[in-house]
Each structure stands twice: as structure tokens, then as C-alpha cells.
Image (spheres, rainbow, N blue to C red):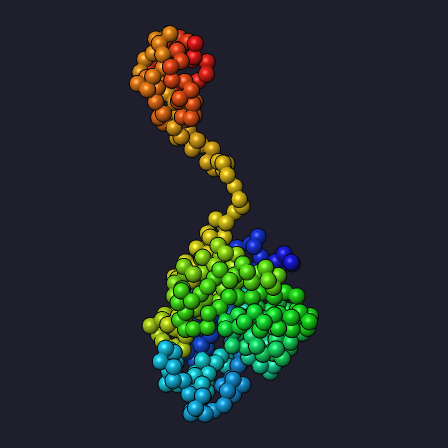
Length: 351
């Protein structure tokens, strides 16, 4: 398996801190000014990348408000909307992409996008994006995956709803088209998702099965699931991002606010740092704490020739005496000389 991939100059892999993506989606609420504020907030939060979505309502669906084109699901945050109206509200105007990406570059953010059809890929290529993302609902769109893979750029694929067979087809299609830098993101395509339905134990299995980098596209509330995912080997975390959930918007209710994104960046890096390696015994930093272990000490004055008993030796702190495991060995032995209370027990004190 290839050890790490590079997107926009940042290395993604288990030897590096998690790559954190702030997903703007439709949280700009049709305001370029707000979109640029989101960019600035993402940069301040410490996120490494900002992701857009590139489509129009017409490239996504038909302008119909009946039948399957109308959302009736009681559990959907978009119940009572037609697909066309929803996408019309959520889409990022294509002419905004360049100023958003320019602001990202100025602030040190990597910016790329999710294309939803081939015309979007063609457009994004004119902007020289450093990577592409395939959304969960498009992970079965093999012609789209093939078109993106032919750009030769890294490809991130969300895996929501996909079977192992469907993921195999997606990964194989991308590799056959020349893409070797692939990241699969474990994803639960419900909005918001629940921790119980996240099944992040899939992450290490997915890494082994498809021999690629793995991560999490997380629609749960908070940062706990993402932190746990890093402990299971996730090298990429993607979360929807907004300025304020109270401002509303199509994705606002399952998006992080800036202070939460800061927490996500900090806590996932701590989780990654804590992984370390298999290790026993004291670390270098623990050496100075060894003195606080218990050890055997003389706790009453002892005369030469007097036997050691449970009354005149005990296991106490600090740790300069013999280890407590030798207590039964030394009980009954006689002192080689007079020993003052507070003396650490050592082998040369026995007669």
C-alpha cells in the first residue's frame, strides 16, 4: 500500500496529523460575502481545507414538484421541498468559485470541490483544483468517477450506502482510469447521522480491503465520533461548517460552528498524537516520576542484629528502596548494623 498521498502540498497518511476538511456546502445562504466569511472562519479555526460543491439545479434533477421529485420523508430536514428548489437554494454559483478559491489561497487553505457531473469537472479543471471529492450519492456514478480519475488528481470518495461490491467498482474504475491516490471516507448518509449508525469500526477494515487511505465524512453532531475515528486509523475528517447554525440554511443543523471546528482540529490531532506505538515500561517523560513508586523503607529505628518485621519495614513512597515484591524475602532477616528510621532498604543492610 502506498504510504500517504499529497493534496495541495499537505501529506495525508498515518504518520501525519489528520487532514481536516470544512465543507461549506450550501451554508453560504446565497451570499458571496457570507461564503468569504466562512472561508476566513475556517482558516481561523485551523482547518486544513475548504470544500465546495459544483453543480446547478438543472445538472442535478428535473424542475418538477411531484412524485419522487418531492421530499416527503418525515425524518428529512428537507421535508416539503422539491429536489429542484432545494438544489437551487443550496448550489454555489460557479462564478463564485474563483474568488472563494483565491481567498483560500491567501489564507493558506487548500480548496477543492465535489463535481456532480462532467461539466462541473471540466469547469473545475480550468481552476486547477488540487483534488476532487465524489459524494456518497454519486459513488455509483462510474462514468463520473472515470472522468475525475482521468485528471490524474487525488480522489476522495464518500462511501455512504455503498456495498462492498459498489465500492470495489468505484475504486477499480478510478484505478483503471489512472488514479492511484484514493481516499475512502466512511459515511452515513442521514442528516444528521447518529453515532449508533456510524459504524466506524468499518474504517480499519476498509483500509485493509481496498489498500488506500481512509477517513470519515461525519454528519453527526459534535466531535466525538471524529475523534474516535482517528483512533481507528482515519487520516481525513470532513465536517460541514457554518458561521452560526441559528442563521439557518439547508445544511446548518448538522454543521459545526467555528469554535467547534477549532475543537475538532485540536482534539483529532491529540487523538492522533496519543496513538503512538505499542510500548510498555516508563517513557522518557516518566523517568522523573519513578521516585513516587512505593518501595521498602525502615519505618522504625533498628538495632544491629534485630530482625526485620512488618512493624519496622513497610512499603511506602518514595521509590529509593527495594521493590515491595521482596517484602516476604526480607522479613525475618537481621540488620547488619544500626539503621535509622527513614532509611531505604537495600541488600547491604542485611546481616
